[in-house]
Amino acid sequence: MTAVNSALPDGAAKLPRHLAVIMDGNGRWAQARGQMRLKGHQAGAQAVRTVIKAALMRGIPILTLYAFSSENWKRPAAEVNGLMTLLARALKEHAAELHQHQVKIRIVGDVSALSTPLQRTIARVEELTSQNHGMTLNIAINYGARPEITAALRKLIQQVQDGRLDLSALSEADISAALYVPQDVDLLIRTGGEFRLSNFLLWQCAYAEIYVSRVLWPDFDEIELDKALHFFAGRERRFGMTSAQLAQAASGAVDLTQP
Image (tube, rainbow, N blue to C red; front, side, top):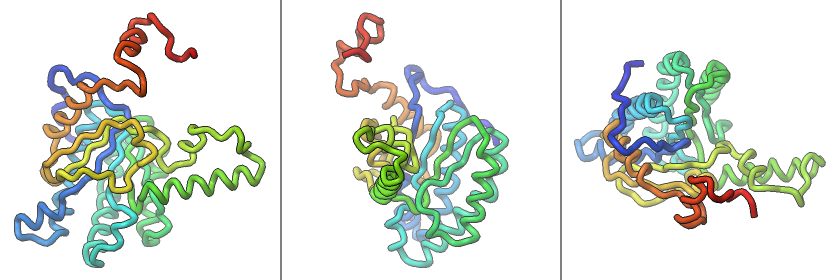
């Protein structure tokens, strides 16, 4: 994997632990050039590589990419088939390289609806990288937040029925642990200028900072990523507290964990 410029601009030292990206605008990018939508997805695949490398070089621990939603099956069959082919090819071609850099690859979503060959490819890639301890790369395929939460509730209900979970003691941590993606999102980037969550990581984005870029996904690069990271670094994340409380906690004058 070739190196990218890992030096962030001044003042952007504070990084998100979990960065999530809604990669929007492939189709519009292609249409603006008089090309088929699939050409935009092919160009977007290069942007995926660029952002993964940039996130890795910048030391971001978790990166989650929205590759194919549970609603995307409604698109024309040719586009869906082309997307699945691109996803399978990308996993096959780049898994070994990512493995060398200790990236742990996880496919999040309902993979049971995918083709058998693609499921086998996913299983091989996840097994190959399962023991890695570098960046975790979640790729959301056939993913929707509402189906994710529904599946988590089914799992938790079964645990209660089996006597493995006390319903009265059910916590938010239990719900998070039952999701495909258990970690909260710190920064959510959406490219393409749209202001929607599009059924992506609804539970995990409860306290996320949201950055909308008008840049279409195929044109999103490390420079655009650093703009989003600058935005995040300038945010005051209060989690329901006041600025004064945060300042006191930072100085050690008050312990906010105590009632």
